[in-house]
Length: 330
Image (cartoon, rainbow, N blue to C red; front, side, top):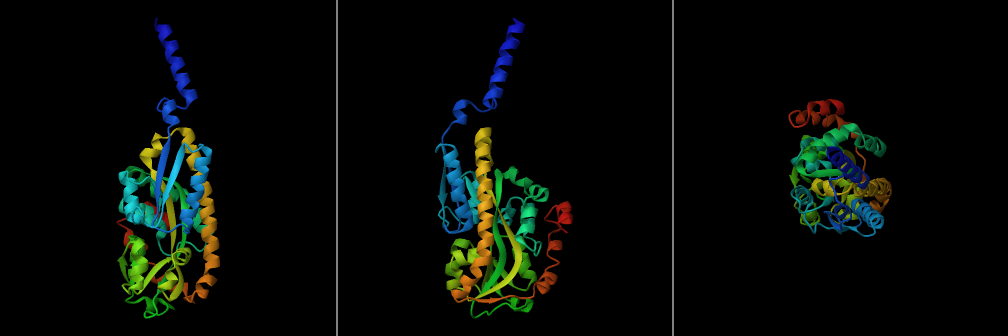
């Protein structure tokens, strides 16, 4: 009898192994799912364009069994709302600046430290490294799984006609500048002499139009795609912070998927990542002339002056970030 039971158990275990694991039944593996993805920007933004590719790849590979529903223009909330939604389970997916996740796990924003990278290629090598994985490890504790790393570009400063162009660090003094809820960016702006104030991106255009800020800072593709040139007159190529954007999904949803479905989502995410990076790099290079055509005055300040002025930013976060990560960054 004992031998018969062991044979039966062995058969069950073997069957589970062949089917991809006892934790997921055939019905669970083949279940229909709709993933709700939210973004604060419009559908011309590279993060949304890339996610459209992700949607196509996933729906094609699953014959429509897994659908991806994309909401743009802050329809589901600002970046902070969308991240909170993933954490709390009301939004399934989003992509946002790494520093915006810092409310839940500070280390993830370390890549935003000023002037870490001189090129896109350097930045991509870093965000694909074990250091970035280590920085993001805490996201799993708050129900966030990173699928890929989108690119948002290098952040630059724009100013109103009244504020004038930024030709050097001294021109930053006293500027009331809008920033995201990113502690590294805010500290960078403060050390440069500006007065950073947080505002949801969805409200930025109107706030600039109404003169509530002297300036704002964002990557070139964001400035062009969201028509900020209509409400700002000057663009200074400061490239003060690189903006990696984790493309994330709820960890509880990820864990509920079969191994096959996880592989499909991961492959689609990496294709989307490649498209996003190519698009951001090309738009950064191509959109300067378009911004000039739209009437923006573009300046190229001495970045060495800015680098020297912000050297102390990293030391400001000794008690915020893991000391070992800071040492690796240095």
